[in-house]
Amino acid sequence: MGEPVVEVRGVWKVFEGHEVLRGVSLTLPRGTTLAVMGPSGQGKTVLLRLIAGLIRPDAGEIRLFGHRIDHLREEQMLPFRRRTGFVFQTAALFDSLSVFENVAYPLREHTGLGEEEIADRVQTFLSLVGLTETEELLPAELSGGMRKRVGIARALVLEPEVVFFDEPTAGLDPTNARLVAELIAQLRTGVCDTAIVVTHDSEFAGIAADQMAILHEGQFVATGSPAEIHRSTNAAVHAFLTGELRGS
Ligand SMILES: Nc1ncnc2c1ncn2[C@@H]1O[C@H](COP(=O)(O)OP(=O)(O)OP(=O)(O)O)[C@@H](O)[C@H]1O
Ligand SMILES: [Mg+2]
Image (tube, rainbow, N blue to C red; front, side, top):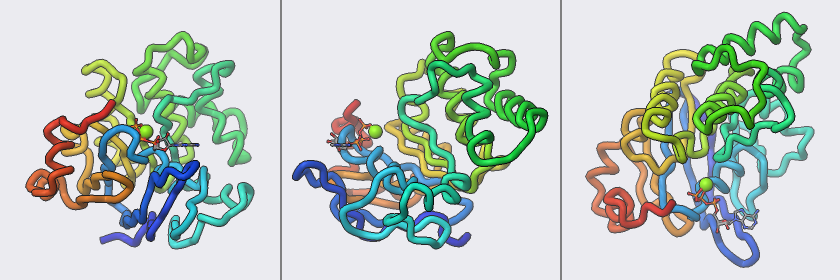
């Protein structure tokens, strides 16, 4: 197994007295894609934001690349931001910026690359997600699936060592969902081989992930390979996989 890229130890997160995460732990070795699944409102997005250093835990430890990040100030997080990519649940594009400028944004923030190199990289990553000839469009002029793919190109443009995907296929029609799922599965052999994918889509998780973890009532109730998870006898896991606890 590769060295740990992400380590989460006993993490708690409480919002206004509501214990969203109650002692969550996980280890993500390099070269692994982990699917985090669970019903709506269970704290999947909160967990991803904690791991990416966008919010802080109330207790517990979070390490990226072997370094504690849970107590860092924003400017201390910058070197870690450069090595990680985040695909938000809502694509979270800048509405007033063109597709080109959205994807170029991390390059302008984190590198001293010249315009020519930036244009090259933006084109490379837009073509990777199947979006050539959209560079001058604004996000409002794109379909939902296209916006998701722009968000993925933006998350990948710095060639991060790990990518965090929050519901990359949710809200897409079946064709676009498959396109995005195939793209994510394909990334493993190219741009980035280590990822956490939050998803409701167990078929996609079975294809794209080698590990699955099911979040229920603030804790992981099962972790293992997709085959192991499907054999789980845990009632919450069974209910989730059969759709009774699917949520949104
Ligand atoms: N900034 C915040 N302030 C207060 N409560 C929050 C905040 N962020 C998340 N929560 C609460 O934490 C809980 C978990 O939210 P989260 O968005 O992580 O769920 P989720 O598992 O991602 O759900 P979904 O599958 O619908 O995306 C919810 O009850 C939510 O209201
Ligand atoms: Mg969420």
